[in-house]
Length: 140
Figure 1: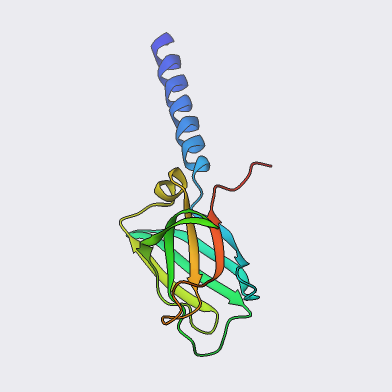
Figure 2 (figure 1 turned 90 degrees about the vertical axis):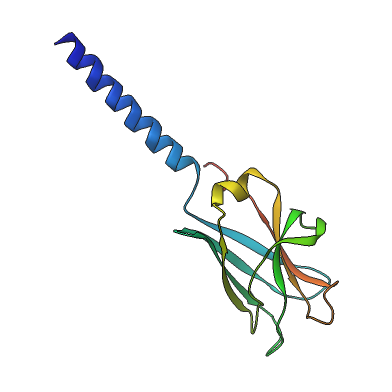
């Protein structure tokens, strides 16, 4: 009987630890995208863990019409990034873009220092118009 109690207690603790571990890393994360270089382009990027990676959906207000804007995940924070993209995303067009970064998890992104950057256009790639830091949600 004593062994059964220990087994049940161990199973309960294992379940609580598994729940705590899964609660520590969200399956969806919303990143606030802020304007840069007086662009007026702001909005969100929603990162969702999917079977083969992380789906990134960018939605910006104030974006130009019919101008493909290169969009990437860079190492670093807004204002201090590695200019070489770490993960390419789909262009943001008319304020929207959706891509899946394969082979990556949200936990991977949250362990590092990353930012999502939207560039003005393919011809003005050096000009950033919107940026958002990928950070864990703050505890309430």
